[in-house]
Image (cartoon, rainbow, N blue to C red; front, side, top):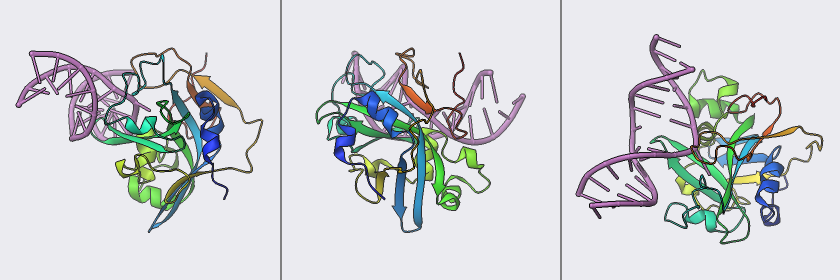
Length: 198
DNA sequence: GTTAAGATCTGCT
DNA sequence: GCAGATCTTAACG
């Protein structure tokens, strides 16, 4: 499988957030391979975006957001969940794309094992905290190069150019609620929430 | 040293 | 649909 290289992530963040839809996220462990198709992303801008962790400058937590593009930025939230971001823009920019949901492809039994046995297919990876649990992603991957196993992004050669994408406001934030920076595959059943209809 | 808020999820009503 | 869990981070004194 062809992995996404660094040039993919150097582009404008909204272009990257849009282009990540339909691509593969892969995770290799001793127990086997887990993979999924990205169906929902959100962009967090380096400037003019008070909801972005980098808005008030670099800190110990968000330092990886200022690192090289194509690397991971992972943080812990609400006492129980990890969130997985892909750093974009040239080194030092301070912006990232949050991966909010994927559609399970490989290793579904393994996902169920991690998320809880009777877990419904549509509930395995339909949210940022859920997909991190299903993919066994934690802070040890903060700053990880996403071209390298055991966690990497790969090109979907069967991707459809006519794939229907919708842009909506972001979810779960209290500032900059009206900025349309969330990208979803229209009608996909693995989104974290049903897309907003007008 | 202390405190308040958070890019969420689950379970209960 | 809504409240509670739970703990790290950052800001403030």
